[in-house]
Amino acid sequence: MKSFGLRIRNADNVIVRNLTISDTADCFPQWDPTDGEEGNWNASFDNVEISGSTHVWLDHNTLNDGDNPDANQPLYFGRPYQVHDGLLDVVRGSNYVTLSWNHLSDHDKVTLIGNTDNPASYQEADKLKVTVHHNYFEGLGQRTPRVRFGQVHVYNNYFTGGGPYVYSIGVGFQSQVYANANAFDGIAAEKVLTVFKGAAITAKDNLVDGRPVDLVAAHNAAAGASLGGDAGWTPALYTRVHPPRALRALVPAGAGAGRIR
Image 1 (cartoon, one colour):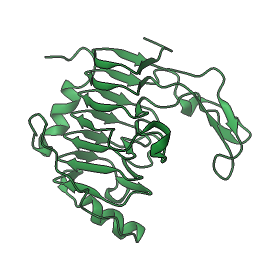
Image 2 (cartoon, one colour):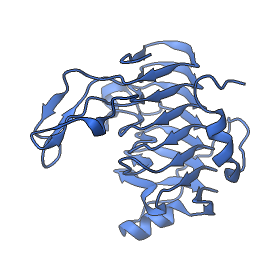
Image 3 (cartoon, one colour):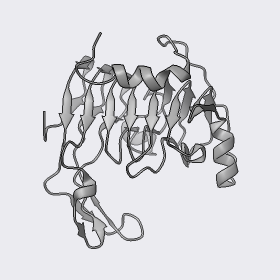
């Protein structure tokens, strides 16, 4: 589906599988002169948005910008005319969400989990429990994912660099991310993590260009920061965890629409 977005709003027990959603573009992005030092264009629509919903499973989907990447857009007011927002956002107190075996590619701002630092706005505290596994994050800019509040288990995902890369996992306000057995290729170890008011992340058994790396130590050494290494919880419910060395072949071969086995 091209130029089409899917919103799952205030729903329970939803499964979305085997879809390709490409180029969910906003024809009229808004200029915000207060966004950053120079202002920015902001689009309104996501390829998929899970909003206020529970027990949602997104599996074997393909999400991208198709033949209309933001990199091809002109500059207005000296800033890129950005017509895309997120690829797959989980927001407004959604809970018990699994994102598995999806192929997300060639996009900048990918996945927000939690869309505000204020828990009173959507009662996000003690919600946003999300599992992210066996996804192929290819040539993406940032937010794979960026997390606020949630207990989020990120495991067995395969990340490749390229494109307008900024970072992979964003440690946001009161987030509790447990990231284990992931593989990152073509990405500098010190750029995998970035911090947005977060305090800690558990990161174990991850590979960068085939080598075991302590992602927290790499971030702290580069940033001169003291991000903690204990998110305060341990996941108990998850599928098989593959060795991270297997992900380079396993995940691209199995992720995305049309590859359900």
